[in-house]
Length: 206
Image (cartoon, rainbow, N blue to C red):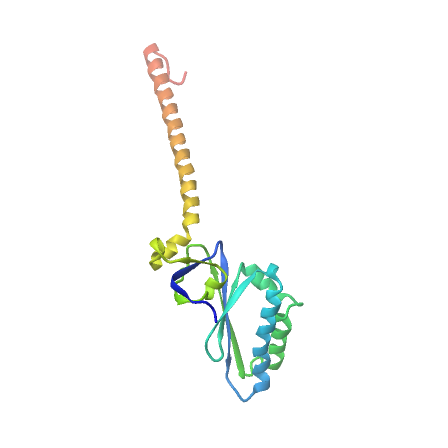
């Protein structure tokens, strides 16, 4: 049994990542030969992905239910899509078999949802839980201080982005100040030339 962490924890994962939810629905239980191959395909895919860390697959979490729902975590959508379309992968023949054996028969349904997640646009909380969900692939940290509230956890996840933004803003402010100083100096020179020319009885443009 996984060790229970007896405090509130939150999960952080650097950079962008993808959450891929996938599941199936058995519509006709008596057609075992139609839905059983679909159910058996996923364990083979997970075993394959575990052997291929370069695939971008970070891990998965199975949620209860009949049939269950799985949340997969990927580093990028491009890598997820590349695996799905790879003819040499376990997914490709499973998808082809589903289209040949089931397709629109209504015996078994499959579904998935894909979410592209950016830093500072998610939050998690786990209380008296073992590593779970995003916590199995990211870093678990105590939900204390600014991370105690959901809003704090969202803003806390974008701290690095905020730091970069503040740095960019600082450079922008310096550029604006320098531009205004240059404009002030140019205006001063123009006024000086106009005043000098007026005293001499000349045109300012001379």
